[in-house]
Length: 619
Image (cartoon, rainbow, N blue to C red; front, side):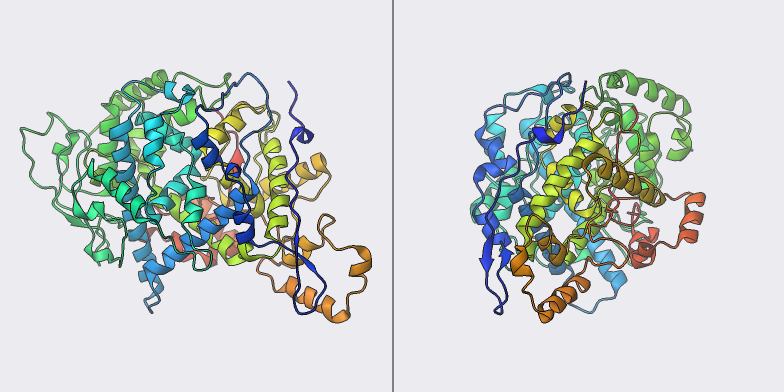
């Protein structure tokens, strides 16, 4: 079976550039982001097309088809606008005071921890109303008919921006996102597209403040009331955030009884729930409620490690497959030749772990020699255990948000959104992403490939509708979902980027790493001025253009401005990796060292936040 060639794609729509006079200079191509979004069609958004179509597009893994759910220009621009709103949210939370940097880092960490908890309450309330049903496993993924009642509810509100930020970051881990919502029997939510069109319309074009209608807020709050009656959990607007006033109660996932009295999210001694050295005394439990032989009976002090062990105990005694089982063995996500029965694979691992179980052993000692991807238990951030009857999400969503945040900061500092040639730049980036997608889904590809920043943005936008992204991956020649591996050593990135550059040049006869400053973008063959007009430019005009180039935030003397994207690479904690990092003295290590200090986090969100790596994970 041969790979689809790029020429089978319908070409991107051609937009007529708007000429803008400025300082009596020659007319330059100009098309601002506001005009781009204003003139966009509703059908340019996957989230809108989802609402008007009655059925999901069918997925046939045995047939090779070109991608049909690729991001569009308005979606990419709207995504940039959303990233601006995330930046404004952080500024509002931290304020403009003169607090020490370490204090600001801690406050933002606690805020994100609370945001993750609010996200879990949100999806738990929805799940209680629209669960797929017990033992449905992966069948709902293939259901083509949409749930009209669920969609009507989802379309009636928009979550608060902090909850949106967590939802957004979680979607950028697509296989884990699928695994969690499949295990929780709530795949209908995972198939719902991120409402980018409605979110964009609620973000101010100048201040980038997020302003939602009272109707949306009321409908959202009414949804939460079906799940909780806690006044603090029913707040829509966070308002002035005080990290020392946030209190939570820890619950046992097995017995569903409270294990603690209200405990602070953070303390000056770093022993709060959101702190690395969390410690709390368990309260005495009603023995008539606690399940006989539940591990929570043996807990003498609540810590993150004890909660991780409690999670493992709960998962071993639960009828559902273990976490990450669907991620690695799902017939939906994997090539048919590589998939296994998730239930059988999980039971085999459970039996092996149960033989090693001991109340006196830590989690890593119980799981270290078991072949089943159990290493993630030691990296869990179990905020879900502060939500009674909530969805169990062991994934460190705080880390997901923080790693994504560095990419957001890069995009916002480059300010592509306000470039007068944003339309041309995004159009070209989409063409490059289409090519990159063909390259990374090539069944013959054996080497990981690393994207550039502009391609990275388009890849993120593509993933905002999980089902559409899965469809395009499963219909490619590899017939498997391509996940990014955010646990790859930073030192491997250069090799992956070098390979991608050579492969891209070989396939398309164009450079992979190119400059995206205003000067270079406007001087490419597609958008540059006619020769006779450009030849009349004065020396003063040329000097201004040169100055514009060298002062652009993306400019580098050593490489083009279409830099390697280092989003989401995680610096591994073992000794050999630490030694290599000390020897390599990578430029980003100093810049972001304070962000990866393990003392700041429950699970250290290693930097650099940027290394997005695509690879087909062996099953």
